[in-house]
Amino acid sequence: MRRTTPVIILVIGILFLIVDFWPKLSVPNFTDPSGGSRVLETKLGLDLVGGLQVVYSLQPVNGVEPDAGALSTTQTIIENRVNSTGVAEPVVQTQGSDRIIVELPNAKNPDEIRALLVQTGKLDFIPLPPAEYGTQSTPGTYQAVEGQPLPTTETPLFGGDQIDQAFATTDQTGLRAVGFRLKSTGSQLFATYTKAHVGEYFAIVLDGNVVSAPVIQSAITGGQGIISGGSTGFTAAEMNNLITVLNYGSLPFPLKEESSTEIGATLAGFSLDRILLAAAIAVLLVFLFMLVYYRLPGLMACLALIYYALLVLAIFRLIPVTLTLAGIAGFVLSIGMAVDANILIFERMKEELRSGKMLNSAMEAGFNRAWNSILDSNVSTLITATILYLFGSATIRGFALVLIIGVLCSMFTAITVTRTILRWVVNHEWARVPRLYGLREEEFKARTVLAGRRGEARTGA
Image 1: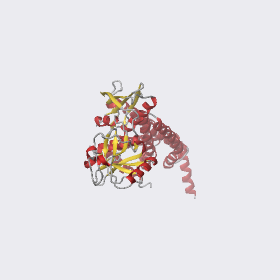
Image 2 (image 1 turned 90 degrees about the horizontal axis):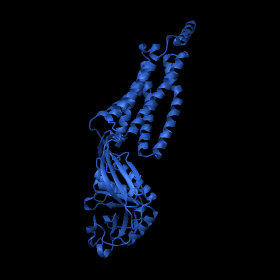
Image 3 (image 1 turned 90 degrees about the vertical axis):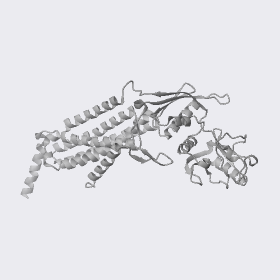
Image 4 (image 1 turned 45 degrees about the vertical axis):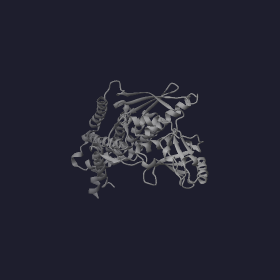
C-alpha cells in the first residue's frame, strides 16, 4: 500500500485540479430526475453576490385567518420547494402573523421559482361521469378538460394527502410523466373505484386545473399510477415542479406575492474581494507559523494544506455547495483543524527524536501516537457540526456542511498526504539536519549516543 499511496494521491490531485480549473466542465446532474448534465461552477450565497427577495402574504380561506401553525408549516414547505430547485441556502423567514420573506441567492430562474412557490398544491382525484366525458370506446370531450379548470362539481375520490411519494417516470409513449405511490387508504379507495369503472376516465386536478385525464384501463391494485402530461408530455421543469409540490405537500393557505426586489450583497459594504483577502491573510499567517516553528515538516504541512484547499474546492463544485460568509468561515476553521493535527504529529515527532530514535522511526511514531488525539478532536467536531446541520437554519447548515467536508478532508491530508511527503523527504541525506526540524544539536545528543552504542554492539558481536 505504501508504494501505491503516492500514485493515488497524485491521481486524485490531478483529477481535482481539472475539476477546479477546467473551464465549463460538465458533469452528470444527479439531482435532476430527468437526467442531463450541469456545468461546474463555484456557487456564492446571497450575502456575497445578492439575489432576489420576495414577500408573500397568506390569504384567508372561507373566512378562516392563518395562524402561527399555518405560517410555520408554509415556511417549511416553501424552503423544501426552493431547495429542490437547486437554489442552495435560501433564506425563508416569517414576519408578523401572515407574511413570509423568501431570499434567493443568485437565482437563475426566479420566475419559475416564484410560480412554483405560489402553487397551493391542492391535488384531487375526481371521477369523470361517462355521460359528460365519455368512455374508452366513446371518448366524449375528456381531452378538452386537460389544462383547464374542471367544469364539474363531482366529489373528489381522495386528495393529495394520500400520495406517499412522487417520482419521475415516462408514460407508454416514452414522454415525461410523474409517477406516484399512494398510502394505504388512498390505495384501497383507488383499487375499489378503478375495478368498478374500467374504460372510464377520471381527472387529476391540481389547484383547480386538470393536469391529466387518463383512462382506467384496468383495476389499479398496487397503489401506484402515473400522471401524464397529455399528448405532448411534461417539460422537464413542469415535471420537476409537480413532483416537488406532491412530495412536499399542499400549502394550508394560498399565497399572494406582495413585492419582489433585487437586492445586493448584505455585508455592510464589504465586497467578495475583501472577504477572500481576509481568508487568504488568515491562511498565510498559518503557513508562516508552520514554516518558522516547524521548518521542514512545516513546509510539508503547507504543501499538504494547498492540496487540501484544492481538494475541498473541487468537492464544493461537485456537490455543489453554496459558499456564504459563514461557509468561508467554516472553511478557514477546517484549515485550523488540519494544522492542529499536524502540530500534534510534529510535537510527538520531536519528542521521539529527543528520546533517541532515528529520524524515520521518530516520524512514524509521531504519526502513530498522535492519531488517537487527532481522531478524538475531529470526531467531536463532526458530531457538533452534524447537530448544527440537522437542527440549524439555512445559514447555520451551510456553515456546518462546509465544516464537515473540511474536517474529513483535513484528516486525509494531515495523515496521508503529509505522511507520504515526509517519508519521501527523510530518505534524503540533506533532510537529516536537526535545525530543519526546529531542534538544536544538543537535542540530538541522545540519538547520537544511542546510535554509537548500537554500532559498538554490532562491532563487538
